[in-house]
Image (cartoon, rainbow, N blue to C red; front, side, top):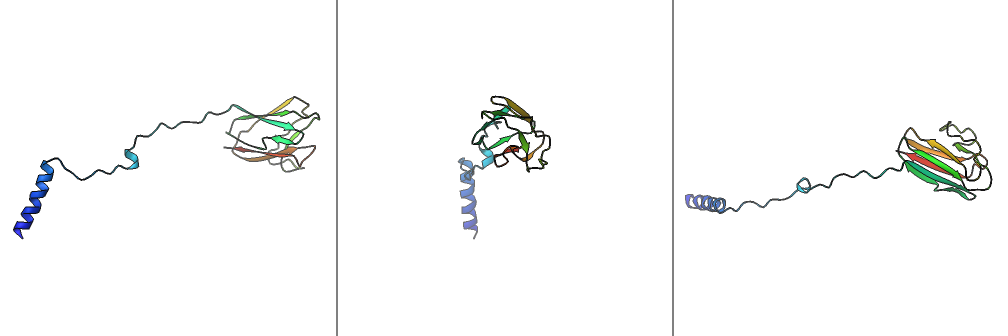
Length: 131
């Protein structure tokens, strides 16, 4: 028994002295991390009002961003918050008539999902997701 113990201790001592050691396993924290990048934030997002609806129908913005609605249709339109006819989800999202090539801007100041529609044709709908 002493011979086996001496042999094992001898092997361990030989490994230590020769520079051998247990293999190192790298974890995810050992890998170099790339610097976190912040996606560029668009100051103003534009939504086109066309005869067939909003383009894009749904957008995502950050709280505090301004959305510009531009009327490319020949008829004047008004933007209003959902639901129709109460327009109560975001009551101050309500424009006067926007004539051809004119704009209406609204700054979304709180997070949430906000639907809107054309007051003249409530079936034309869009959505803004505010992060």
